[in-house]
Length: 246
Image (tube, rainbow, N blue to C red; front, side, top):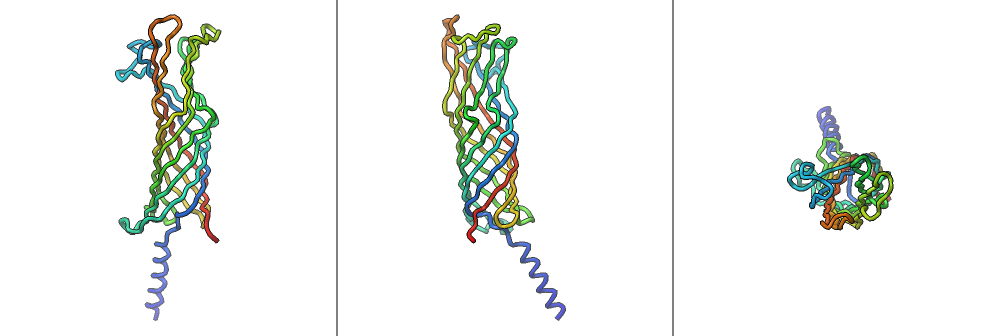
């Protein structure tokens, strides 16, 4: 009798350990963290940079700015299968969201601040959408790990400010501004505390399409050509809420 009782208790405990929290369904997340906003700049005609200041690939300079960002998102995770190795579940998610930056300007100053190159994420907002793949790899069945990837879009402005010893020279201060597409890739972990609420931590890398600026300086017959590559790397923590049926 004691052996039967012990077996029932042991079976109950083992069964409890393998029951996983359900990560499927509609969910919302809100996060805060730090983001590194980076720009790599190329002077293809060497108008503002000498040969010695440019790398072999033509990129001459780079600047960045560490900023605080708040991201938000809505997603839906579908349960696909429970047949991964060690009977792990597999989820596929669809995600949409954005990143709000508290500061949107990074800059590089040259020649005693007479010549300034800036990167402006106009509107302080980056929109994104894509897919996520997740599973529960840990012994703690309340936690999942995920990778996500997709497309992003941002309104980016690259002004060149020629101050001429304190006086802004508008003719020699060109800019290029556009809605620029890009991609993102990232990953993180999520812990579900109870039925609805959870915590999450993740990292994400954005890379936007190159922007090119062609213009003719007023004191030169040679057309200048600039090229920019913009990236953003964010690390953040936040909350997630799963909408469940009662």
